[in-house]
Amino acid sequence: MIKKAARTYLSKLLALSMLAVCISCGGYGSLVNDENRVGQQKVEVEAYLFDVKIRRQGKPTSLRLDLYQTDSVIAMFGRAYFNKGAFRGRLTSDSLNIFFPASNEFLQESIDALFSTFNCQGSLSGLPVFKYFSELPDSALSETGLEIKTLINENKKKSFEISASGCSWLMSLKYLKEDKGWRLNEFKFDDKQSVRIKGSRRIYKSSAEIPSGRFELAIPSDSYRISI
Image (cartoon, rainbow, N blue to C red; front, side):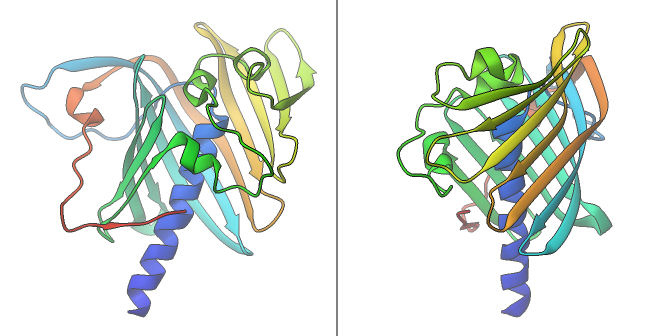
């Protein structure tokens, strides 16, 4: 029972990390070692590999996060170090789904429901999370009511601080100029209570091909649904 509780805690911690990435990312996917999937159609994506560090209630966790994006869906793959806490997920314009094979648990929520997990007064529903992956915050977030402060504004580098009236969390995003446009290089998220998350880009590929099966997320019928 104790082991199950520990696995569930880690799953929720990693799910929270995924949520923060979904809120803050400004690029497309990355470089997970792919299985040999014979006969599957190849899909062209942009690819990212992030090193992510999470601290929740004083306890640290580190993981590698791979992202692959098309124009309508983002495939996500992660693994905490020491082979703990592997997961895979899908992000669309209105939902986030994550499956944790080791604990047989899954997260399945709408974007609006995920935002409701933060300590906020008022509603932040309808945020265009998917736009964050291809537009700078000053344009992608301009219609959301979020408060955006430009920290660095250079030809090859930009940095923003993002907050929302009535909410306790604070987020910072750093971008580098790539051939295809501005892409996220680093993100930080602090809920001002118990969670801090930092992600740094290790690898970026402007064009990669992966099997279409990478975007499939089969959740077993006997798996347990969790919430953040």
